[in-house]
Amino acid sequence: MEVLIEKIKNNKNNIYNKLIFVLEIIASLFLGICIYKVLYLYQDFGYISKLYVALSIILITLLITIFVLNYRKYKDKIEKLFLTFIIPIGMMFVVLLPPNWTPDEEGHIFKCYDLSMGHIVTPLGENNEGDIYVPKGLYKLTEEKNTFTYSKIHNLLSEEADYEDLVPAQTAAKSYSPVSYIVGGITFAICRVFNINFLLACYIIKLLNFIAFAIVGYIIIKIVPFGKLVFAIYMFLPMCITQAASISADSFINNICLLFIAYNLKLLFQKQDLKLRQRIIYYVMTILVSLCKYVYFPLVFLSLLLLGNKEFKKKKVWELVVISIILAIVCAVCWYIFSRKLCRCKGLY
Image (tube, rainbow, N blue to C red):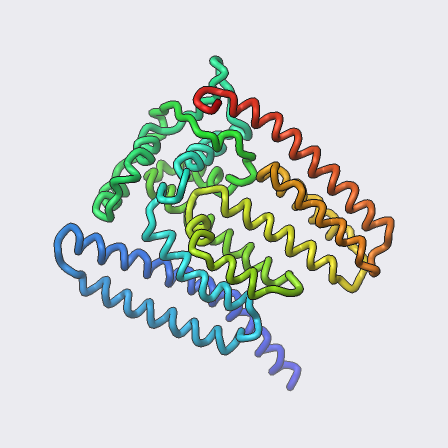
């Protein structure tokens, strides 16, 4: 009987752990939408909507309840508390800050769309100019970034998208590796199939990018053996959240580098020998770090620290170090040569 009761408690805990953060994401998203509606109606019509204000109060109350419950349940688990507080803050950035408000975001939008067309690398074209062809409506959207108001956003969200009328665009982001734009590329491809409004498509990418940031941040804090609070505080910096809630590639790049550092520290203090799965993960992360931004490839030399772990068999750890360094250098050099070719194209001398 006691075993059964314990099993039921564990099942309840598992359900709570899985659903509470999903509920928090949904509540935070709707809260952001309600606040946007209040601001839009007040800005355009000069009145405050009692309905959206009431919904906002209900959602805020729900979120405060989640804060209290999670703090009591997870007060010793920094990674869980990180998720608890980063979700509502990030969602406000996602909803209330429109696309193109992050530095150079329009270039990243063009690169995302280029990848959605199946271009792993940007084609140089007949004139060797490396133009990215994007819908005219999407290009126009990036030009209007300095005139965005909640009223204008409301009108833009109701416009019909035309994905067939393409215009050329130039951006230095075309020389970036496609791995930083996987989320945005897939999302744009799906939005094109369903003819989803351009601005709404950008908001969806912002939302998914932030969720990816939160998940990776959770993993980083969970696996790092010490300094969990330091990593958490860093990811709460306004610039980090701003980048995470945008279409920029910088958040993905920063998170992959932090994850690589955290994984190195985890392995350094591991009390058992290296497993095949861990080595494969290490090689994949090495490739990602080197391709995301080739100037970051020296991070792979952190692998030399692993030689100090006496639990690892010397042959395995030396194999890991040598292969990782070779992979990093090869990926970085190859992508550098290729990206220089693209950057010598029109407008990027």
